[in-house]
Image (cartoon, rainbow, N blue to C red; front, side):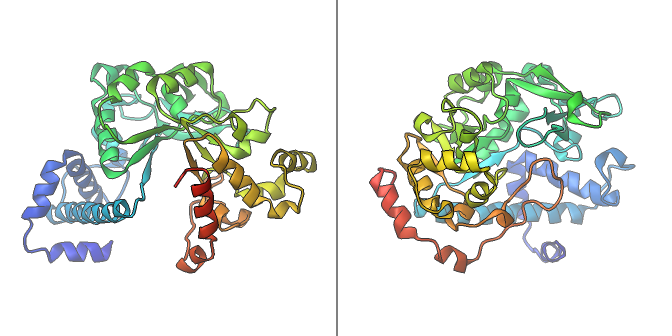
Length: 370
């Protein structure tokens, strides 16, 4: 950041930067938020004592935004020329200490002082016995509906301009969301509240003709959530590792995949495929190997499992890079409910070169995915 600020000071012609920011009012808002934050000693907005800012600091943030989006456009163009599509992730909620809440407090469930009256999370589930207390302020969906979901439409349109597709994280929260009292110690104190549902889906229509919108429909999925997803036409998610938690009717088993879904061996929240197999109890491991008709050593079963995924009816199959590299639990990306030590993973060019790309190219051709 110090280098970027130094570069901003040296900009002689500010006109292109200022023109870009003028075309993107949301970014101007972010830059002003960061400039005011700097004037307040980088404290969160609800502790600010002034809304003044330094004009040079404001321009530095504008310059940073300008450079980032220019560079991202080149990355996206480079990928597109090589037939690579990029999917972005849009969290359903935003942080309390964010420009989003600061500039749109009337669109969130906050009290007169701007403090959240209730916060987001999920009830106890497969990932966390105590549930997950995320702490994000909840939306005031009634006010958002009356406003025509202007903030959400702008957010989705922006994301769809950056990516070829967007995954709406925690899609089930649009049908019903887990509301937790702001002073609760665990997520267990929460309760379900109806979300915007069909109104929201209708408001998002027409934002992009070609952009793919994926519904992250994992977790406690009710018939109402499935109906909302299907009426929207969004593909849902299937995660192989969840397929062995119940019976053979599980939608996460490859023989039950439909075409309008995105199938994963595991997501960022799961163990790696090899780590998952390692941790399975003997009975479930035997069941999994029988399911994939594999009789060799379990730690060599990954190619057979991935082949079954690619042979399924799923319209899109996504394989985490750790699974292509055959890595274990030490490379797991995220552990839900654990605040620290996550999302610190990098891949080297040498590691990528070790993947048997021809094998996977063959499977893609074999199952008409190429």
